[in-house]
Amino acid sequence: MAERRIIVDGLTLKYKGYFDLEELYKLIDHWIREKAYTKHELEVSEDVYKDGMQVHVEKQPYKKITDYAKYVLDITIDGHHIKDVTLDRNGRKIKLQEGGLKMVITGFLELDYEGRWQEKPMFYFLRAVLDQFVYKVNTERFEAGLVEEVNLLHGMVKGFLNLHRY
Image 1: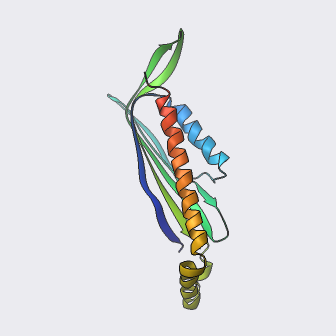
Image 2: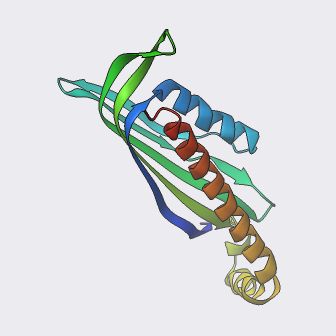
Image 3: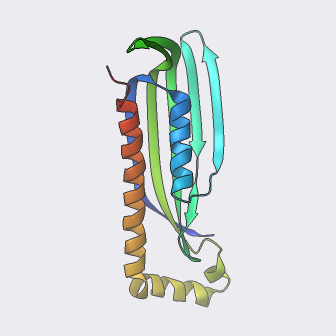
């Protein structure tokens, strides 16, 4: 079992207003491909009710940094009371959605994800000592890189959603 450290714990973005849900999905998928993450979708569900559509999306993309460390992002998008609307913008009719969105991003640093250092108790102890004293600089650099990437994704989605404000 790999050691999983929570580096970014539940960075939340709440939005209520107009947005393009399909473009939001494309934006996140494009960012995942651009940053060389491996796409992993856990759950995608859309339920239609009288008061609008409910959306729940869980993605868990990961990126191997070295043979020992990898980034894992847990992206959860919950939408509620989503309705399709047609707006007139500069003389053109565009189809958007209106409702509320909540996006939560959690960033994990996973160490020894292949479990090579857990085969024997001596290796496990040696790994703990090496992590604490020798490779501490590398681990701190990995943590800072993960925080930067999570903040970049958060800012990009926030900017995208603010494009549709009136």
